[in-house]
Image (cartoon, rainbow, N blue to C red):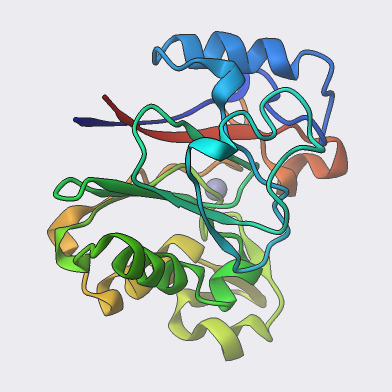
Length: 232
Ligand SMILES: [Zn+2]
């Protein structure tokens, strides 16, 4: 059994059925998923709320949110699953997507880790649920952090230092947050091995030809899609 994971980019088009220009989103999903051999009508999506809800996806959820937004799983920013050929999707435009793979069980996780979810320790909650449901050992997890806004571009208020400590750096009179660093530290605290964490280090805001960026584009911004699945 293998692990399929990928992130769409701007040329793949908007993947969201609720943000940006949604007219071509289903067709965009279909074309993008075909590249990975994933059947688009079975895709599992969430109504993301920048919370810390983690949802265990099983076969009964197949297709929720694939073709319409309303059927998406409510109040969820992270998925876990141990079911084969069930593709999980989260949607981002600057927020880190975090992929987790336990090759031993096997099982997977996929996290939408914006600052509010990160503040609520969504990484820890996802790993804890993988431990409870699947008996996953954090030391055996392989983790990848996808493209996201980085501290080069992610200006925040000074008060973020109170929450995120040294992951907030000051340049001149401005403050910048490295959200991927916060989540990497949390992964290490959970017991994930440093050698098993892979970070793309790519900034979605700097590379606006390649990625959608909420910080750069605002409310009309489209969304990329991060997808994870266990293949049969
Ligand atoms: Zn940047």
